[in-house]
Length: 390
Image (cartoon, rainbow, N blue to C red; front, top):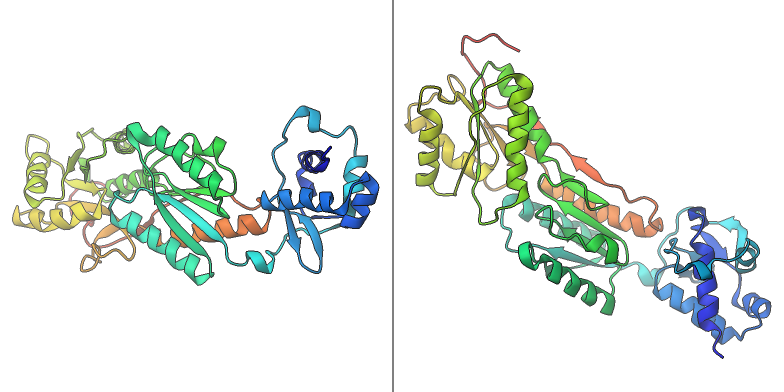
């Protein structure tokens, strides 16, 4: 009878209890073989299976250490007491943070990405991922991820692919709130979700840029300058998602918080004629807008010259604040904008650093981060209106 699975199961069960066992060194193979009355070949096979599963890690010339705490396989695998653990591991010797062995210095990351989700934010974020992985000497492969009605099926196909050829870590782009519900529960191995929108932290851990907070801050800044009829103009895309609905909700909440009148928000395609049509609606009627928060730098680039042609004195009798991306080609020549500015490139680098650190620390140091936009005042929001300040 082959006893290798039972030894592997015992090791697995011993580790499934206190997380403080990360970093413990396993007893030598010769000692384990004698203790459990097994051949050294069977002991090595059991250890090899857990090294392959990345539960244990070999450090040549040093020993075998606990790399991460696995999920418990079953109640029947739970050891009756601590004696089994003491037979397997040297409890008085521990490494708090493991360094990857030489054979694992080059990690292979897989990024599941929405490649047809084109905007400057995603482009810069992806560039940060690629450049940081390259700078650290790791491999980064991109795969297509589906959303909408095909998301659930695509997630299962992705997971099957991952299980056939597992990587060292995964980066999952969440372009919309409901894109990858199955990943958290079925994906094996360290993973980090990245978001460039207003998605809630339903997938953990996540590195995201918090667009909702930028809406509150922009409306409050315009209000402080004396503007009282603040509208919002966004980008109309082919994706009708929860992300767009939530931006309108946050905008409405920001107005209610300040006691300002609600003005129906508009979206526009990246076409000058369409932007002009939307601006005409916002500036006409008995109570036209005197300020705008523009949630996309493409639209802001089209809107600014159109406003001037319409006789609007931007930064004087009319103000706008734009959401923008540091390093964006759209921003070049428009540095004078008053803007809420994100840095997607550095966020991409951060995601890679977090994933590497998670692997090195056996999963103990991977957290979620929400980044707020940096307020960068320019000349497009200053007001000379005779309203009281504050």
